Image (cartoon, rainbow, N blue to C red):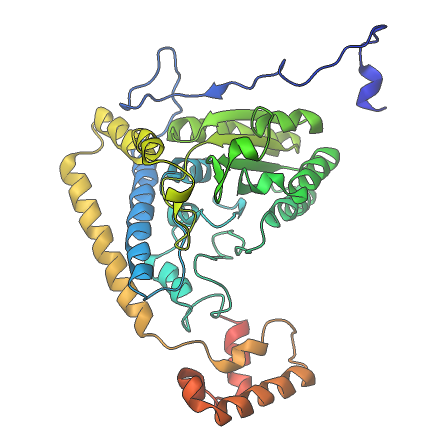
Length: 405
């Protein structure tokens, strides 16, 4: 029976535009780190709280140093999480570590929380021989099988329907896990978003759709993307539970995601979370936000800095101090700089890895194409100085190493 068969019958035209269903914003912490009156904070012990905060600090230090490295010409491209750490890390902390994360490209904080090492970050950013993607991806396109973090894909929103499909498999497995897919409000304008939500609702799968509504899809402000009340009301069209949360309030994000996960896993049903946040940094190292937003607007949002709000709450609990902050900042900066130097010195991936991983046994056509590439490199060695050094490495050794890395 369709849901429309349950509708109330009327005999005069009655039009609605959705304004009757304004979605509220869930908040727990004020800007000074104190809770709102009558707010019930989630139960987070000291160890977990510090794990969350250290991941936030590391992510911000990583972003600062790697943007500087890009400006110095040491890195080709970078995208920062700055300003959105609470949405990313708060939601990740609420998951089981076995749950799958399918992110967009600004979720390095999720990996940091789960234990992705600074060397693993650097190897991917510099695309060296220890990069899990073997240098085939742009920087910030991380992936980690062991940490249940699907490798980032550049095309916008492709991960959203993939999350629905993966969650369907989790439902069939029946092991009590779910998938979270994280994306921006700009990605929610793609057809993949709507297809994914409809499929998840119809087939009833344990997936959490987390939209980071940071106000801009690159340079396009939200009011030019949609005229409705944000992304949250779209859940009603798919008969899906939804919550809108202050995306800079890490305890609110954590609590919302905790309850969303519980609902998704216990009922095998999807949930949509809209986290209201702001991208304090440029869209990417190739973007200049001064062309589409004011400094006054940015400064107003800096007053809502999620890292500072978390720190003030920790200090109120007696779990953090100025000395702790200084020590952690210095340690993280040193770790990032040392790892960057190590990653820069490592060689590029073996040339032969270009044709591995797609097939269990490398096809004759790919072997032939590789030989054509080698011939080209030998003809123009000055244009490929690094590649020329790898021409004579046996294919079998490179193939085996790539498949079992």
